[in-house]
Amino acid sequence: MEKDEVWTSEEYGTSHQGRGATLLEDGSGLKPVYFDSNSGGFGWEVRHWSVYDGGTHPQRPQAHALQAQCSCGWQGEPRIVDWTTAGDLPFREHGWETAGECQDSRLCRGRHPGLPAS
Image (tube, rainbow, N blue to C red):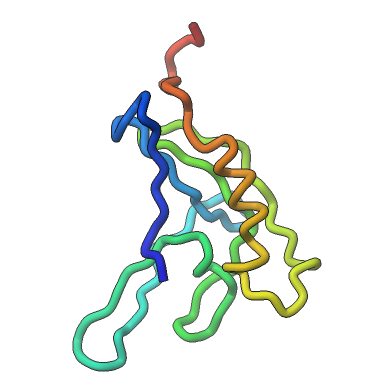
């Protein structure tokens, strides 16, 4: 299980790291999900988009949309997750198409919020 997914480009390096964020229907972001190891007193906090499938162990919300976000504050357009066509597929499998749309617009390409476009 991936803890998170971060995208970078050679041009901007770590000053513009992108990730696929998950959103609820009201547009708010989701907190990391804690997965207990079941053998000892430790676990993992996971923010990877694929864990927000409405599962029950541990209890976690179902993503309404995925959105590309950059560490500089830029946010892409939310991409609605189509749960109706998923059938029995887990989110980590049917969500790749939506995640791919976020990756296509994944980085702000150096644009900073609040600054005029050049």
